[in-house]
Image (cartoon, rainbow, N blue to C red; front, top):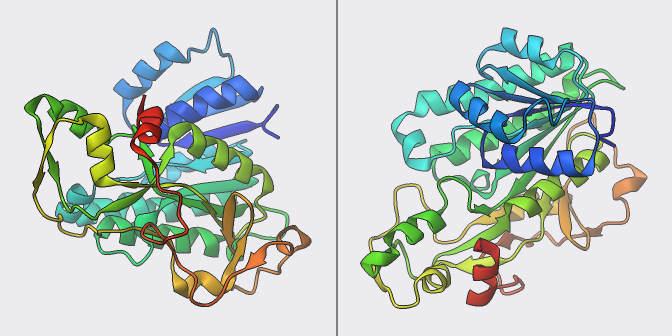
Length: 325
């Protein structure tokens, strides 16, 4: 599907963008692969790995999703957009709420308007489990982003731009992950644990990229795709990284949950289940269920996909080590 197409990744110099670039170049032959981000230093570093001599399709476009005029220029001739740009640090968003809103919410609005105007075929946005029943500003902005993207289909004329989202949990090894923190502190023989019962959904960068590229192909506009992914206990992660370390319980940070949720019970009536993923279908008038999603299994109104549910696959310490090495 991506052969001879022009693909643009917002926030393309981040952990996800770099892995996505690597996999696209391995598997496909795009006409152009555009990295859109605002950090010229990160772009220059990325060009050392993916230069335009070895990869003639590569383009590097400096810009900010807050700048709608710049997005119009960048989106000209683009077929598919993977929207990964966001302010993601929970404490930073709490302290700088207006900045998080400008990037995560207003930026999403700009992308929708520019994509429709430039007749981009598909836009797939990255979301997070923190968007479900949010308790912090970051989660609230990602919930707004989801709502905006799904509603964007109402403004696009038939046969023009379609919008969908992918929602998943913590990414192993991404910036801000607890794993680099634990690795840096393991020589102290004491690791900070916010809560001994804490659980999180875990997915590798490669798994997240492959899931997104697969859903970019099958999306019809309006869906939120949720992968079935395993759960890790925070204590198991700590013990896998440093078996001899002691725990220092420091308490839950502001806006943090003990367990995370990928699908709330309020969404269950619109959920279809497949072997490896769920799809949340929209309720808006623009949407009519196609044959593509008719075969999915319906869920009960009480269904909730949370990290503390008994049906989840719980990672062993050995499995955690395999994921992080």
